[in-house]
Length: 462
Image: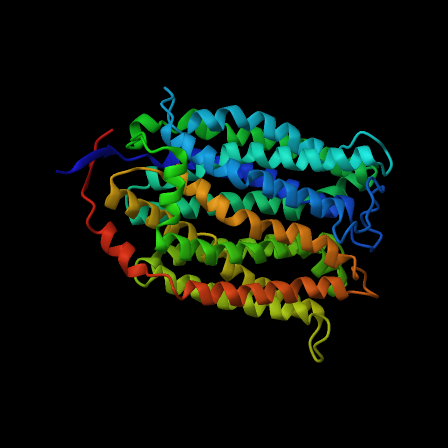
């Protein structure tokens, strides 16, 4: 017997994707904590010293705050995801959690960059650690249910690819705005007479407000009762999480992408150092090259969707991982290759990153959604939230390492005269990419595809 469900219209899908635009702005903004508290030694940022920048027992305050935030969410995230599976809220299993977290996380995101005293102090250090931990917990309350909606509202493999495409575009715009264009906007505000710290905090306030307004849109416009099967899971949270970890295909694929996303943090947090320190360009080039990279990735997006219908998604991800390995190798030797200018070298890397972003930004999410949907078909239990939470649990320890390691490596040299720390960032990321690629080879895609082919759905008219 065919199950009937209403297909979500395009404009509501866009409203859903704008929620990702919002949380992308906030998470990218929070990722600027290293730049704000340990800026490049090029004289362009000129922020006041608000916390000690020295390593304590091998860790900076920033590294410690990021590490503790990941540890705090280690068990919190899976529980939030599993609890949303069991929710019987009148507005839907997921939207209640998204509603109660959108405003608090936006407010806390701003105060990460506004410690109570104007000079380095223990109070500022405690403030930073507390704000970063709280921000990550509140963001989990939003993101776990939000991510769980993709396998629910995407009822076919093609639908899930499209959802991953539009949310990837939304994430990219958030990263472009808060992670790249911010340097251009900051320069503009400084040219208008603002101090560097005032210009930066003004932008943080604007990003916080915009992030909240965007994150509330899916709560308003995505009606779970109409567009999701919304079958409440009767499994206890711990039971659901354990069963998620027993899914071999999901574990292997999640492990591979976890290692990949670790390298992505090295790219996101390191790009300002790669461009200003290794390539000797001004901060404004971060915005220009970032915009060019995302522009090129958007041009590839339609082709990614077309190719995904014709060849294995796994093969596409393998290709992107190989390109990313090459790109990090090029970053590691930037400025040291004779016969080519650093500007030309930089644009070659940006071209590669455009292709990588177009594939890695869409296809891994679609594969994960396919695996989760296949599990619901096999077991009859819809525990998308448990998978989202278990995936977060899976990533917490590995993903806590880059924010811990990056500030420490930068202490080894982050200036044009001593760039050792910046080059080591690229070398470490290169090694991680090789590990990620090897793990991915063990994922059994055929099993998932065969299970999805057995699903029997009929779409009813709105």
